[in-house]
Image (tube, rainbow, N blue to C red; front, side):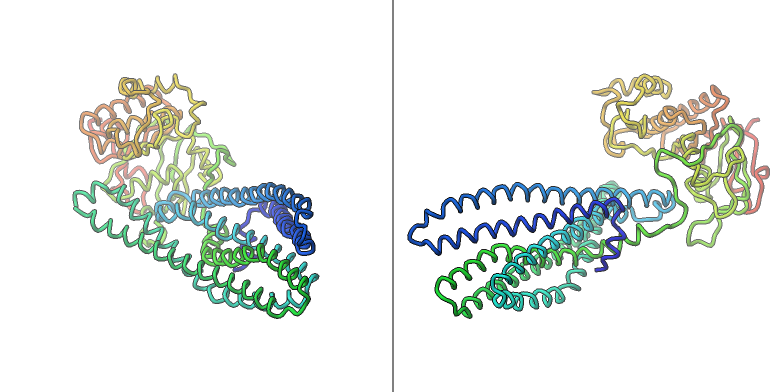
Length: 568
């Protein structure tokens, strides 16, 4: 465990707040010690005045009152510590999520989504609770042990040294024995849990395919195997925890027994010494158990430290802004141009585009044609600023698209893909995407729904536009999804609309209606730029210009790949 790495992962604000948490931990340890110390006069009084124990009652009641107040204070201090830990989890989880988002669409698509989600949610929680909270608990227990042992040393140095001589080597030896084992168990559990989540995620996402291929059995078997692996790891972890707890308790009790056997003082002194050490054991036992179990937690959670260190220290490639603020404004009033663009996917030697030049002017209605896999969607992603080319660039009115201004550009565009993404929310939330429901212009939404031909349908819903859409839009038809995607772009007020095979999953009648609506949009607004990807000629017939990707050699200019609209 490298404490420097832990310090490096902690955000700056939490390093400062950590000072207050450390002080609260010290205060709690002092209060816990005081809770034992106030009982010593009670014990002494009982042993000294055995014939009249009621005379000790005022002292006992005073001790009781202090312990009650101490319990209230300890509860407050524990809440303060816990708030720090779980605020840290929230902060780290947000930072990891933002780091992934800043890596861009290409990174997201080439990564395992379950693994990313696990790192955002589970790994950050393991670090906060399994490492930081455990270390804070260990620190609290060690401070308490130090105070108690110091006090016992002042009271009876020989007996205290004997106690430390028995407990100390056993704790150190046992911790060294389990360190590697607990770290491996933690990594095993993390891997098993990812497999468990992956199997469930795949079952839900691919239900239809598993059903028609009679493949449920295989996937459920994978799930069962992963669950059994998690259970097996937890069983071994808990077993080691139980063994360690019993081991340390035995060591403490053994120390007390040795103290009793070695005492040669008078009867009262024997009783008093034993009583003091017995009272101390009430705190020593739990503190020792906390140290050992906390150390086990730290060891089993240490893998999270390595993962977070890699994520948070990785500057990576291009950094895409994810906040509402953009560093450079971008205005589109003339043309979108690709200049000398070369692009290939990471790890591939094959260029999708090489020295490509292409221009789309504001207000144009352009179609892009080509067979599957030729690069149409890749071209869209470059034009929309999701992918940055290896060479060359995309220029908006002569201004090169960069990570600093890409958010400004994306605010001006609307994207309608083949499979519209719908959130598990209302129609309002899916159309006014990313806008808080209380800030939505509902009259505008009604007008847009009328324009896209969905008003009658949404009006028939139980709560109208406030009706909840099922997860992934499973209760919405393909044509309705496409119209909702168009409605989203219209509500946004996009000046450029990108349609990526938007009508390929709907029937002919719905396709004709959507194409007619897009054509009407283009005709009604001369400043609206529409760029369409399509296989079907019927979808391209309305376009004023068609770019055939398959006629684009690796080194070409736009003119050689542009053909006039059929019939014109």
